[in-house]
Amino acid sequence: MRDAGESKKQISPLRETQRKLAEAKFFFALLKRVEDAGPITKEQLDDEATYFLSALVGATYSVLQYLKKEGKRALRPRRDPKLALHEDSLEKEIAAINQQNGLLYDEPARGRDSRGRGLRHLYVHHKMVDAQHHERTIGTLGSAPLGRLRLGEGETVRSLYVADPRTVSPVQIVRFMEQHLRELEQLVVRWEHETRSLSE
Image (cartoon, rainbow, N blue to C red):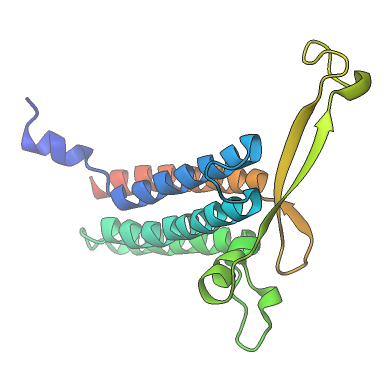
C-alpha cells in the first residue's frame, strides 16, 4: 500500500492540461478518421470534418491556456524569486507557439477584417470555417506501387484542407494539426518535468 507522500508526489501539477491534450488528440483522431475513411455519422463529409476541426482547434487553444494557468500555479508555492524567471519563460514559450501557429491563433488588432484572423478566433466570434476534401484515385492502369494493388484496381486517397483565412491558400489540415499536437505534447512534457523538479 502506498503512503500519502508517495501518492501525492505522483499527482501531476499539469493534470488538467494533460486532460485537455487528451481531448485534442481525441478530436484529431476523429478528424483523421474522416480523412482516411469518410464520415462517421450521416453528416456530409465536409460538414463532419468542419465540426471536428472546430472542436480540435478549441481544444488545442485550451491546452495552452491551461498550461499557462497550471504552470504558474505549480511554480508559485515556494515564492522563490528565481521561479519568476521560469514563469516568464513559460509565458514566452506559449506566446511563441501562438505566433508560429497564426493559422490557428492570430487575433489582429480591432478594425481589421476577418480575413486576417486565425481559425480559433473565427470559429468563436464570426463564422464556421469549412473544411473541404479533395479525392484522387491511385492504382489504375498500372500506376499502383508494386505489391500494393493489382493492375486495374484503384484506391481513393482523400485530403482534408482548409483555406487559410489570412491568405486564402489551402492548408492540409490533418498534417498541420498532427505537427501542432506533437509540438504541444513536447511542450507539456517539458513543463511537466520542469514544474516537478522546481517544486521538489
